Image 1: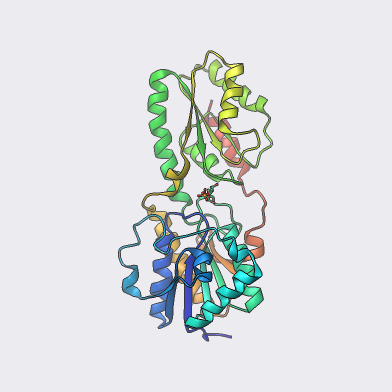
Image 2: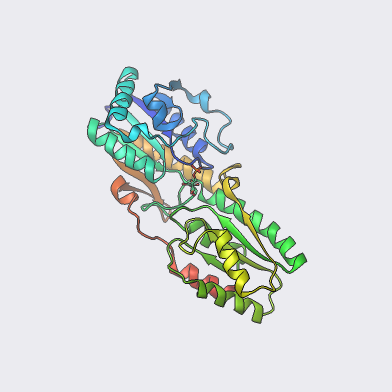
Length: 327
Ligand code: F6P
């Protein structure tokens, strides 16, 4: 079933990520290059259910390459989790003659896309758009580099004030189930320790690293805490540390949604452009139910089921290097 696709729909779903706009632009412009019709579906799967669908052309996506967020808007749709919601969505697609979809998002987006594609025999390809970097089948997801740079910039600033007051700082970063942002930014910003969701690290390990910092006369101490860690909330962790090191003045900074905003980095724009073109071309080649990713600079295709498999991809070597360098 090659080259039978005439009309593509594109949507962004789940948490927005810098670079999603670059991906939308790539999908739209590539589809136009092949003289396909393109429709933008607004507010993710919810917009598909509610018929929030508009035609797009090459000019509709001008000046969005450098913008954060998603011009198509996003949502986490409860309705799409139901068969009735998906039926409504499919009827809307039919109304516009949309015969294939490009979905940009993370785990939840691909889970929805997988069911939808199977139920209605609709070609669907996915682009990894999430700051969490928690998808199999790509070295990096669109948005991860941008979010990491935001975090590193923030932590560098926190270090200035931490050093001035000889303080200990706990900086909470995003990553519900994945410690990529914490580990990468911890290494890049010289953190004393990182607390990751993938590790069953006892509190004693953290206290040990802090004691080492004390023994080595570190004047500022930065701990990066991933929000999904197993030790507890960042406030609770900070409190437990205060009990053991009452003489250390400690502060907590929660970076929150700041991490999802701002212009995408050059790397994210290039990744999104590359993957967006590959998504359209792969649909034309008859591919479906796969995530387009990039591994070692090469385009790869991973079935949705495998892309969302919840296994840790954390690089143990990075943890080892962080420990060596934080002394
Ligand atoms: O999945 C991306 C992400 O930013 C997670 O890191 C975070 O836990 C979650 O989204 C926050 O979601 P929301 O914006 O819906 O609160």
